[in-house]
Image (tube, rainbow, N blue to C red; front, side, top):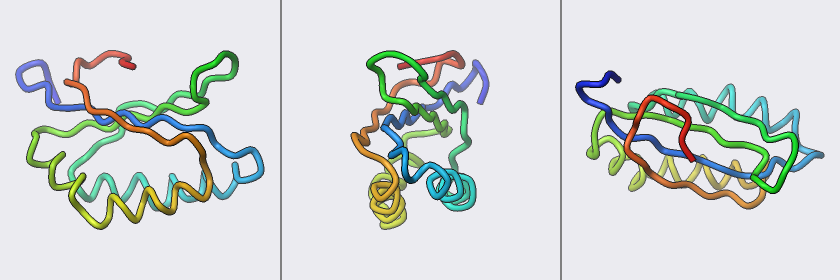
Length: 105
């Protein structure tokens, strides 16, 4: 991604279940991120909120174009990944924003 073609950012937010933290980490690092990369996304950031009312995780993925995003959101892989993620997290949500190369909510 560069300034000439900013692309799109997919922002995921959720609360990790405290009792599932180890399994969550393993799942995200060994399955979620590699699957997303295989579908044309790169991780842009991962944030942990230690204090306050915000979800305790915010993860950003970027892609080059709308077709890549649409393919992901319509795929069985997307649904399966998030179904599996639900065993480790609560309050999962996502949104799509134009990629600006900076922290975004």
